[in-house]
Image 1: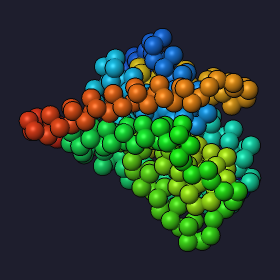
Image 2: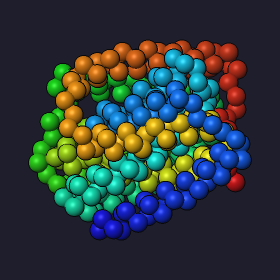
Image 3: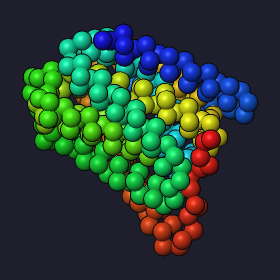
Image 4: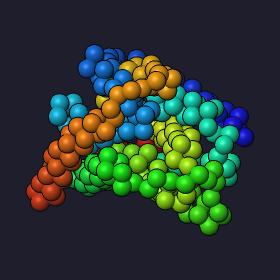
Length: 297
């Protein structure tokens, strides 16, 4: 079963990498030390379950590195390779312990939702994208706070779910896949949902990482083909993310993650407020563009 999952993930990633490299060469896109460092930091902590979309978006906003309309596709493409490395590690370590129907179903549903979401996000007005990202950031901040206050469900010990809950989880992952295109991460909602349903939280990681990897590798190709993303930043995030994931996955970590989550929470809340303000201003002034990018043919 693991082979049936790993093979398409690896093949899709190879195609994704070829398309990405060709586009980067054609546009002469180069990373900076800042984006390489950013990719390393956010991917390291993403592997520990903190998430990477929200803090990366926050940094983009602070440094004004990426126009708001380009943030979602830049996130998805730039953090995909790191997610693939995570998925391989978690699938090999924990994937055999998860109910195969749940695991495969959620990954395929998220991937399908991701492909459906590509043309949607590129046709959505900029202020709506800003609003969706702002809401996602607020939800991420709430997730960080609830984790620190031990208000998240502790989860059960199950490796699978009853059929009804399995169907609900798979359907929810389809929606999560769509939202990934808008820069809303899938780790927190998937972890909370499956934990509430009684899953062992550790066994949620293969589901979350596998879904993010296959969705990113497939939908990411379409985002690259639009030509509307910052490839220099994408390359930087990619280069920095790969070694950071490997270190985080196998290193015995003693860092006080609760303190880090509170710091990230403050940063994310500030970025969410900026994004929300920009969305409201764009809506009031009716000055937003018609879409975030041209749709790939």
